[in-house]
Image (cartoon, one colour):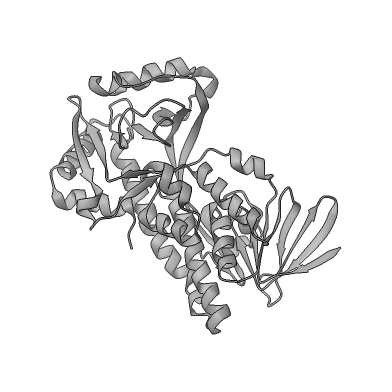
Length: 393
């Protein structure tokens, strides 16, 4: 067995792991990234792409923002549509939040930039690793064992960052009695299509429809992402892309339906919606980040942004520890992160409950429409949406 040493072992190379690794590397803190997937697999995952102001600031801090600045689409607001008469209201982020904006830049593109930065520096990474397992993280000598290209490794470290997603080994290595899990599964899913067609609108559109939620989004000026609320009983094989386009146009108001450009699907999937948080998210010298610690329904566009914030917060704590000898930031990582996480969970749950068809209750539907109408005609209500959407400080 080959033994290696580092300060921080990072399990997983999604956005949380790669952002953390690059932040630490830029500050001279040695770290090693280990992932059981290949780089090609990681780059092939289709994920979110709406960045909060704070995430944009982190990417700029990393020094990898050139392509984002060139290709990303700045959003100063989004449009809500509701009711049988298709009422609509634009929520202006910039004027309600003191100048904050959102940036549309696909997670796949961000991952390309992060991987390129990682590969260009001398930081050590292992992809296609097998049997990745964290050990002794309640001791002062944590380690991660794994096999790479047939050779067994033991990575000794000071800290372990578990950035390997909901199904990853990091959280699963923690004894169940050490954590409390909070979870909510929603009784519907999102049928999504990614296509190389121009978006129907310059900004994201959220629509409450009597037959189910509609989201019109984009990844660039030539690539669109559309979602329809569907029952969990729906099967992907029952949906052709032509059927999707027909249903999308049927739910949209006529003026938007006429602007829909159809085309082949680059990716088509049905995703169930869920909320998930585990507490705490530090276990000895193991820290959980991103989907390993929490999942939000995508309605609030918080998943990627929470992962980036986790990485930034842990990086700051590690920087304080290694440069100043203080552990306050690390000691407060779990409590402070969870305070932020629960606010994002609340917003995502609220937006999901507000815009989706929840059941056939006429009373509930009237309440939803009444609340949307109030928000659309109240500056205070619009400010609530805007400040949560662009990200709370």
